[in-house]
Length: 424
Image 1 (tube, rainbow, N blue to C red):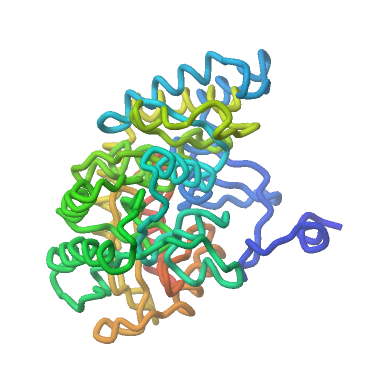
Image 2 (tube, helix red, strand yellow):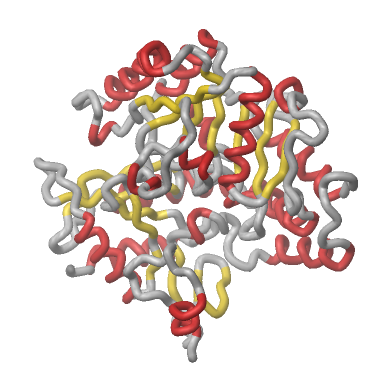
């Protein structure tokens, strides 16, 4: 029985889509190899995780060194140097007054922990999130996720959640043609949501600075500044969900830096440790200290090996200047993609920040009707030709391009050339 057969027999593959799976043997940089030795150009990074590249030597070396000393001892009594050093590092690289971190294992854990901390600090129980948002697969994080496709058959969800319109300017909920007008109307409508959909007992507003699962939606300039003004006027905390957009992915260390505001709490995971399981949420001291001993715990949170890997990962991101590299490469890639017209596919919009890019596939430019079948066919054709990408969006019609940030200019050019030649 081979690996694929064993998966079918013994692994719950609810997470596997219709694309024929490959069996990965190893990976290096931006290249993944299957068990037959075939090479694939990875343009998805394990869902925006291996930002510093597969098999980064410095990250592996740091993890090995820590593994030889200590793998696990628990976070409830003991202190470990790697954990303290990483918390200090995160306080230095995150925006504003964010200072004290709580470590967990996954993005969903980090988001749910931040939600709980916000409620505990404010003494309030309600929340506002965005339509088309995605924050995780737990009951709590699905409660603030704003798309039915990720929530189906899982309810009922937590009460007290209101949803504001997301600034999806290509499909503006207010039918505006100007991104600036759309974005500011979406921001202003937050006031209406608070007034009419809540009991004015809102602890936090949560948003992804760039919406990943929703289709790589980038809010226009001024959106977050207006949102923060409204939140501050109502005494509502802003949680920035940087799980997918953090760690140089968008051309900044964290994507909220493009928005020009400081979040009150931030959740992070994925790119934090280049593939080692780790997440964190961070807050200023006065907010973080709302948690008292026993209020929150994670058995494996702050695993020493993962923390050591994260420290080496951050050091590499900074030394290699990968934020600037992501911005440069992303700008070139988006410009190149906007000039493409593959056979039987229409690119309605190419959008993104840095190397977090979405291509919205539609049936025609005039109708903007989503074309999920054509998007799926493009993804399958790219896989056959040795290119790995993601697929998402509310209508499942957005090609998601999120390669390791170490991907070379030559590799990006090869991706563009192959995409241009595809016939579906």
